[in-house]
Image 1 (tube, rainbow, N blue to C red):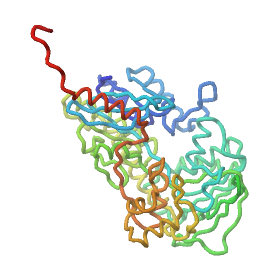
Image 2: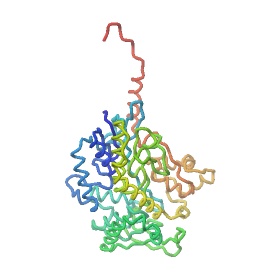
Image 3: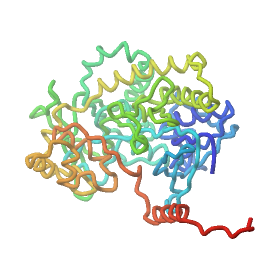
Image 4: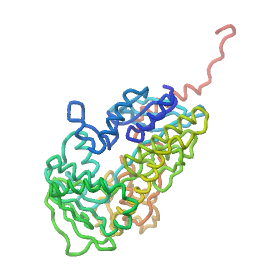
Length: 467
């Protein structure tokens, strides 16, 4: 299939970009792995359930507007398209995607431009018992509630650090779950130094605080989970207070009985596709200019892929990217004044995001306290002791640790364990440029190879006089 623009990711940034570009005459295809559009923020249950009840209440008006505009547009929406590779060619770019839940068949979308709106993913710092049934990520608990209207348990502890914990705890409480505690490792004394940058977030935070109070959810700040208990399933967690240096204070441990733990330590941008294309990264995020362009011609990026910042920031970046793409495809220079309001939202959003990132940092010395028998890499069952042994053998970076221990060689390709490996070793995470963004069946690769071989094979000469 040939189109002008392929947008990868149907969250706030992707939808905003589609609408901005299609309104200016661009043919757009929107590819997303989920069966429905909206991303994690606007995730809804399956048809027949109470769909609107899952959308955050302060975002329902925005979602209604976006959903209606997308339905009325000419955008070719392609759900259950799992993009595994974006290929640069002389005539533009080709997006390769696996189809449906089985992902056995691949389709190619050819375009002049691509927007990466691939979102982000959660990080969890391992601790003893984190692999027990009943332990889920904070975002996983939110996805269960939004997408299936189900909860991970009857009594839940929400723990870790970051702004995601607030909507998870209040959402679970509103669904009838007993939230035994919200355990946040951040010290509230650090908040005043970021108050000015976070002024626009205060009404939203006050709303969450009021709901926590109404549901009588205990809040333990400057605390962390040190162990999860249970045999076949989670039965409780031990939490402890942290000192000013981020170390566990001896004698402060307490047991919280629960049958589920929703834990998360922030988010990281999804950059797999950007890295396969050779896009420059700025830290963990895709580097972009004022138009949301990457340094690879024809490739834009917006939303959490360029830095974790929330739905409002993603919408603004997507709108700017869509208008920029429309102008560039027409061969004209974009007019920044045309998206000035979105640029102001973007500037405020990035300022707030930087403040939240500085405020919600995981405990500085977390890695020191992880016992040797704690599993760090779940896919390959690599323990903290094995990771530390690799360092004693001379590993000075996470890539060498991976080669010596297989940590990060499993199904998730290090997305879950890389932060844990880095924390235990004290090494900074090493960016990994993978050939493909997700596992691909050998049959799909073989079929692609056969097509290429047939194309390159010399053809017999055409007889004289033949057409």
